[in-house]
Length: 183
Image (cartoon, rainbow, N blue to C red; front, side):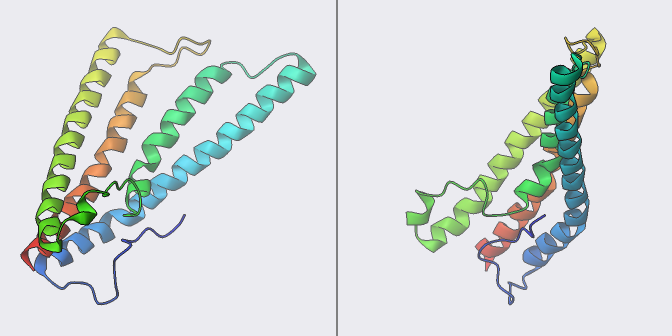
């Protein structure tokens, strides 16, 4: 996995309290999120093997892997949920700042905490809705439509956990941006 660091981070980073707190928070979650990313990569590897088996089984043996559609769909959910945090640790990702770059630096320092606060609110709502959805489909006993009939609710909770992994990242960014706004 690549080492995600903030693009404008320098060796002599700010030593303000919020900046140190944000760095400590990132140091805490980074190893965990990297291992989650490895889990996602392992699931991708297993998915490739399952798909190769399914294609070869279909062509040569006349029998594809039973439940290959369920396996594919659920593997993609697992991969997505486990790599959310690892992917968003890098500051070079998911940034659309065409307009904000044109503002003076003092305005950007004030806008950044607001943007991260909005992001945290949105993530909180998404997390809440994912958990509510998981509870609903668990109560209904929903399963995948394919041959395996795997319960769907663990995957809803896994996606909620994936969304949850984003919250410490954005809390750290919010705290760091507050430190920059105060400096």
